[in-house]
Length: 251
Length: 251
DNA sequence: AATTTAATGTGTAAAATAAACACATTATTC
DNA sequence: GAATAATGTGTTTATTTTACACATTAAATT
Image 1: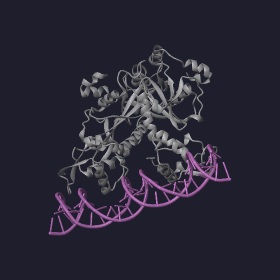
Image 2: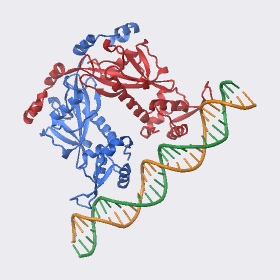
Image 3: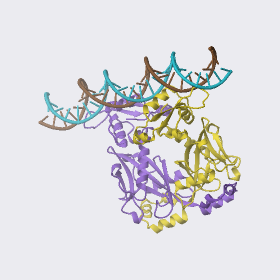
């Protein structure tokens, strides 16, 4: 296949001409198959910090390193379905939304052979979800403390984190981390944790009120050790209608 | 594998415990392999129109439909390398930059069996590149005239087109479509074609001059059938230094 | 050669958005 | 009851975006 480079254009063209379905089926079945995996980058928000869920590598060789939640895709399942299955098998989590990030396919990225992996990511409130698989193999790591992960998982993590920071500015992801009724301080904490920055409280309020997606529920925070703030809920219906109008939170 | 769902958490955990490298090697080699392909979405700019390069499907069953430039990935090559190889084999193009878009892995997306495909895209000036494989199997289609493509290629095309429109607003892709020295009208034509919109000439100029990446070369257009415009070149060095300062072209 | 044509080149005003910044208010804690 | 530490509010300035009109230049036409 590689030698086609040196063949004449004409010969090349002929070789590339119409194939029957069965020709391709043969190629697909016998020749060019590759192991495909999914790696899930699950971001968690807890105590105003952004964390990422890692598992001790299940590969003996890397057992002292942390890795993303991954496994091989079964040829009989959709790629997206595989991501949800793998996440559930590894963590018990089954009620979250996974989004594809990117695919990593360097030839030597995995020691067990050729494995191309598709990264997926998600963002949850750690307190709202239970890890049904509880052991010390799973751990939430602060996103600032990610040093060396197994395989190329550091690179996958970084790509995913950048994508998360971008997406949180373009979509109302933040509200899924909060209770239905939340204070503006809580909302700001979410943005500050994910974007890893501090924002001006007054301008933050102004921005969100001007978007006009917050509903004042006429309630106050309870049991907070300071003056309680007003509670709001996010108007999903209004957002759905005006979706196009969402502007990035460019703090 | 699917039945693990119903197994006890404990049993599940044990099954998922540390594996030796050879265990995984067996899985990788024998069980779960899938055909992986690359599909290239090559956008071309010509006569102030945005086009996309399609090839008549090489699958007999779809021979009356157009398709993206794709082929199977060889297990012995990097995924990115496969994209460049496939593009070259199909078109002769070898001097362009490919960027990964997304991966499509629905189980029945390909009639020949399970094929997961990774989409790549690029953007070139059609006049600056020669298709070395010249036959009527390859054709530049106006991006507005894409109706039904083979397989799920319409979906792949649309995802790629959206990504292109986003990227052209965040990176100086446009200049690779122009000669080294270009007029502001030519630059505006590029943005209007890719973003499929009309812009105000005066505000467009203001925006680009304020970015301060254009160098006045003190020359004028030649052989244009109207008042010639001044020529500029893009200051790549300055851009590289101030990369962070590039602001989206939010017309 | 004069006129017409179809572009380029320039500037200003208004509107919208973002950034910086200070003080009164409220509930808790001591 | 005083101190504390948060919330709630508004103004000013700067920046960015949008809308919009007229003079200028060279080619094309007469």
